[in-house]
Image (tube, rainbow, N blue to C red; front, side, top):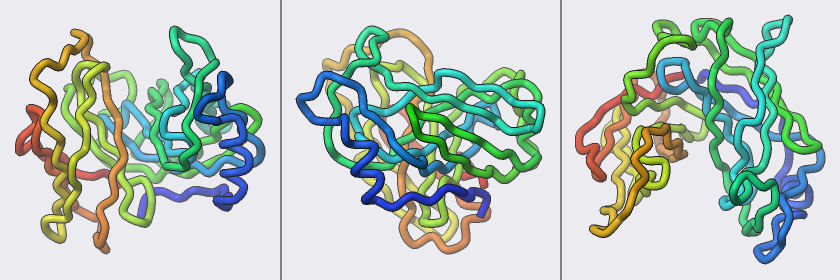
Length: 235
């Protein structure tokens, strides 16, 4: 496996710390106290990294700052995304793993192992991301193709699709369709869906239950205009 979360935090601490400010009717951003559990995966040919953290499904943090320090550690600061740029938001009190996309800065070689230190509010966590050979890396132009990478040993993976930021595809089903293939099927979008005309990466997490050997596993996408698109799950 190519992902190792180095900071371990129990679910009780997550619930007590991360969700303390996430009341469904609250008017402030969540407060994070203590260590942060982080996992990571390469995406988009090493141009992006997905950082998986735990917390409210409606209060997914976003990248605030990212830099490669003199010791070769990727330092990432996450912040809460409120309406119209505000840091204030109401959060549901569920506890889920959610993904944040981070742009990879110049100087990072995706073929080499990468230590990542993540700061979110008053919480700090780190992860080590194993290098993957053959990735284009930062500073190269994306091909806007879907991509995927393993997040954790339990079969969790992150994947990116490109399109309107306001019309991300919705996962309807995830099936392990062979020992080397995982199929994600998207729900049929409403016929009257209105989408912005931007082109943005949309990240999601899924679990390939029962996958025991993660080498050479492909993700197959079905639905929402992506029928039959295949991409290797990196890691």
